[in-house]
Length: 170
Image (tube, rainbow, N blue to C red):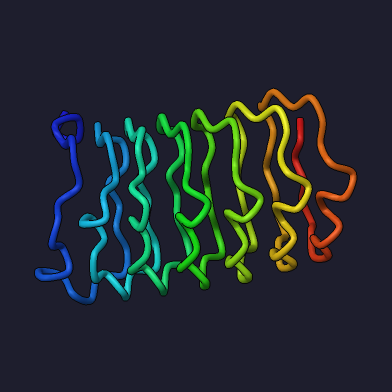
């Protein structure tokens, strides 16, 4: 199958496709995301990199994606994410991070995602998640966190989730 021969994302895509608004490279064998992969793709609204073998996401990899509303990096091998990885994505509404191999997240990782409506953290390796993690995400309507290794969750974790309509913990 052709997709299995794709091991990395191209660089300088914006030079060829400056108006690109959707980018899908799902079901390939991509191993990492670098800063160069999405450089100057300022009009991009949706990125789908699900079903790859991504283990590393470089700091600043998504910094140029200021109009992004949907990011799917599920079904990969991501072990960790820098606390500033999503800091420039102020328009992001949908973030799908599971399944992966994440076990911890900074309580500031979603801090600048004030438009976030849906988040999927399911099927990772979390035992606990900081109670302040959704503090800045008052527009959240759907949270999926099932199939993790939770030992405890903060009783105040969802205090700021005033628009929450769906919560899946099991």
